[in-house]
Image 1 (cartoon, one colour):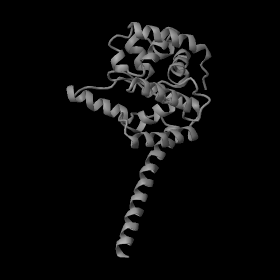
Image 2 (cartoon, helix red, strand yellow):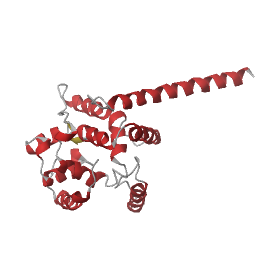
Image 3 (tube, helix red, strand yellow):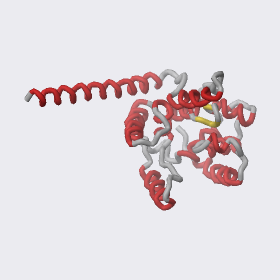
Image 4 (tube, one colour):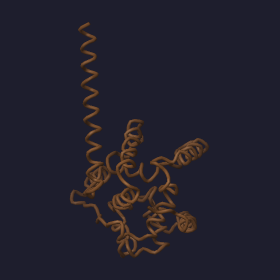
Length: 230
């Protein structure tokens, strides 16, 4: 009997700690609905990596409100990363199934099915690891983002915190890094090229005009007129 009581008490403590941990995430989701994130877990991870090589390293980032980001870039990001963004509730089940089938066919991970909302959940709070726990936590945060934020806010924050190269985060820093112009001035072609870099920006920045990326740019440009924005 005494052993059973201790098991129940331990389970209760674990449950309360889990609730407190989830409450911490939820509190930040609510806060960032109104306040702009100063940094993210993913930014902190990348900065630590940079400072292992250069203790003085800093990230390049500058917040830009939604209306001061090129509409071309908004359309390009949706067309390249999540063409059902406006219509889904955080998860693209069809896209996930297609990615799974493609990965099984290739025998390795070559495609992902994460939506913009899922990517934002990961970037804000989590590591880049692919553990089952991380994916489960990502799903929970994604649900909160979709319930508590509108699509415009999700896309605004995503475009301001996503990685676009070594130490480069957000649309404004990316536009300045690659084109020496503000994010508001990006052309359709420039926006499409930035969007196709998103799956692996630190790799693609070495050769942003490779034949592979050139082909992807053409495909995204063709889809951009049909991309629905919030």
